[in-house]
Image (cartoon, rainbow, N blue to C red; front, side, top):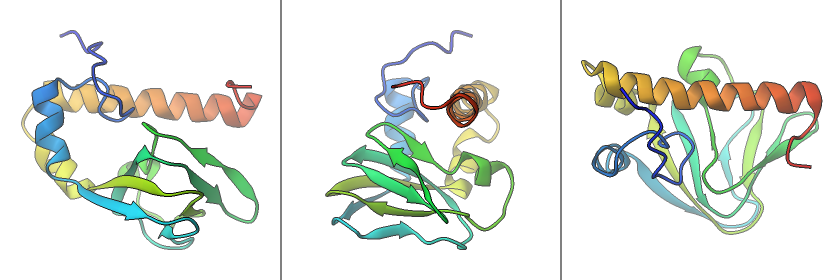
Length: 141
């Protein structure tokens, strides 16, 4: 299996084919946000991936944690383990996001080890990058 397709502009879907991407994105809810509009409240129990398509999202807890930029997503840790979000996520400028429920992703990958491996590889990439950023500072400057 070759998982290194990388034709999609979303980090979560980067190893899916165009047809697979069309199939899973049709299960997601598209949301438009205005500046300062909150998409995830601190202390809420996430049930979805938040995938930024356009704009910039700010992550804050007791302090500023960082930003999400187009193609990036939030929620992988909650997909693996359910607990309240320590962060609030709000729009810095007008945004378009996809919210993909964890249950919809589970339905999409059920019974297809290839799809599950592609999504897991993308989630692994994201977690590794976030660990590097937290322990060594931003790798983007």
